[in-house]
Every structure is written in structure tokens, then in C-alpha cells.
Length: 92
Image (tube, rainbow, N blue to C red; front, side, top):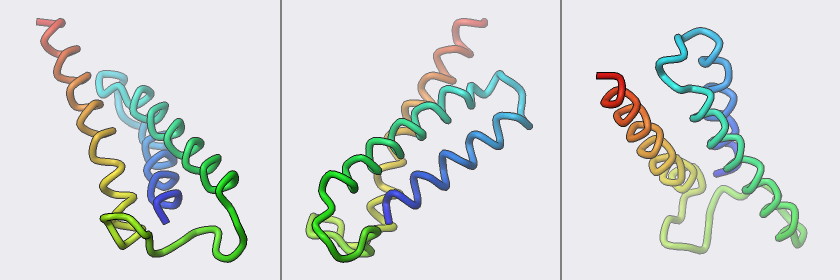
């Protein structure tokens, strides 16, 4: 399920990048999200041992796959926010 949440975020950032101005650095955000989606997809393919490909539950600390996907997106958005902050400070 974390593959789905990351892919939806990547598609959303890519589509939004064509609407909003370049000041928001959405190309950087989209690149990070697509990189994460590809890494998760490769992890799913290499670790596939039969059964469900998109798991709804996990064996880790976070049991829900959707919550895990959102938790994986938080650092990406934090890094993107920091990059926006730095670029705005450089402009002044």
C-alpha cells in the first residue's frame, strides 16, 4: 500500500508542477517522490514471494500499509520544505 501512496503523491506533484510557478520547486519534489516510488517498486519486485503484491498490513512497527506510506512521505516533504526555505533565504 505504501507503493500506492507514494505513486499517488508522485503523480500529484508532477501534475501540479505544470500549474504552479517554478518558485515552489515542484520538479525537485516530483523527482524525490518518483525516486522513492521506483525504489519501493523494485523492493516489491525483488521481495515478492507469492501472495499479495500490494500488502495492506506490515510486520513492522507501523501495521497499516497506508499509514506507513504517509509516514514515508513526511521526510520527503520536510526536505522539500527546507529546500524552499533555503532558496527563499538566498533570494533576499
